[in-house]
Length: 263
Image 1 (cartoon, rainbow, N blue to C red):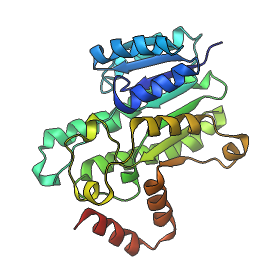
Image 2: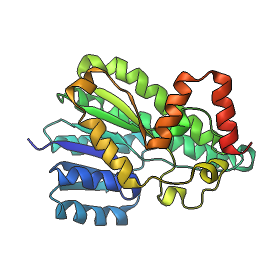
Image 3: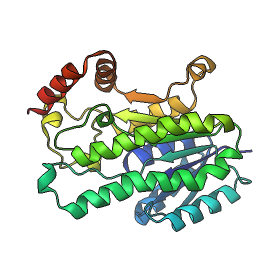
């Protein structure tokens, strides 16, 4: 049977690039987003590279719609989903107190509740699929809380925590749960973002970089799978920051982040 992948936020950026990479491998692609015009373009492009598109509107903050779309998609795969990619997200940059409260709340709705909705609704289909994998899009901002990205960073700490917990819980069902930790990615999400860390570190990654690492994280070798890697930093900068945070004392990690943010 053709393998299947369900991707939220698939119309543009990382979601689109990931959909096309899996499509090139012959996957049945569930591409969902609120951007229906973008999805129509995606569907045509998936077909052109050899995949099978199933696209549809999805607001990840609506648990009923999330459950409905996952059910519809899984039905076409015999009740299974090989890969769930929780990619939909928002990023708002600036001083915490200057960002309207409703903007903070919307970011939490999408980045936190959207992930919970997807995980909860997808579980029965993942459990029914041998070798199922969940990929959550976290961020290098889940390594240490980021100035000028306080709320966004906090949402990604949530993604990190739920990934770690479900990697343990769902292991009994043979479901791998992992997350990706990229730094800034050159997509529409970062188009107008200007913070201390964008100036000190730059915006160097592309959507294709993240997509390639997602495919690699899904298709790890038996040896790496045995090591049970949960977090996948993307790019040399994120890998260096992750390693530094792991082995440095807390005061030094704070100092490095303070310097990078220009505070």
